[in-house]
Image (cartoon, rainbow, N blue to C red; front, top):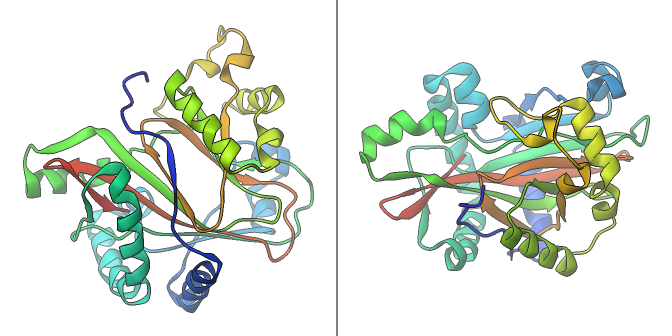
Length: 296
């Protein structure tokens, strides 16, 4: 992964009042939320999926390539995105404008792809968790663009660069004990960038997950999405300390941006309390004609 070109970065976009405005806007659209099923690679540690559903409630607002197009087909995705985009544009036009303004100095000129879904929201609502176990998703790289590639090639031809896919996670709320993104297998330059971000945005979730015990937990669960491969999961993977990830905390009002080809992981947190939420605006991008087109 030494040929990754995009930096890891954080842009500060919203103040506290604006964060509350977005949160209220998301809840104003509750009738358009789509309920999603939770899944955890260590579900045997927590009991059945139904047990997780009893205290972790996961929904989305907006259309997603990696759930709607992948599971239900392109026609379903297009119909869903047509409805969702109208609502999201009406409710959050100012937010999408601020996001473009914030990202442009770091990734160059960019715009939303008009024929795909606008970036949309992941919404997690929590009740009291029955145990302090760590909740996370599998290690993965972002290949969501694959489900739109045929359409984009028909529209734009051969000017699409799939070597530098962009991903971003724009934090609106986080649980009371924090949530984060974990980056795995970073080349040296990006490790230094991640460490600089940790110094700028400290949180105790870093110490809770950036350690050897967590690496052993992930390896024991074989927590990686197919078809991606990572040396940690080989029998002869070597010294486990070399795999300790870099954990970057979520901060409400800020957005991560990073290469989708970096191995990464959603860290939801632990010891949830009733009323905790994790709301993020999610999006991806491909460079087309030299400029990023953003979508979900």
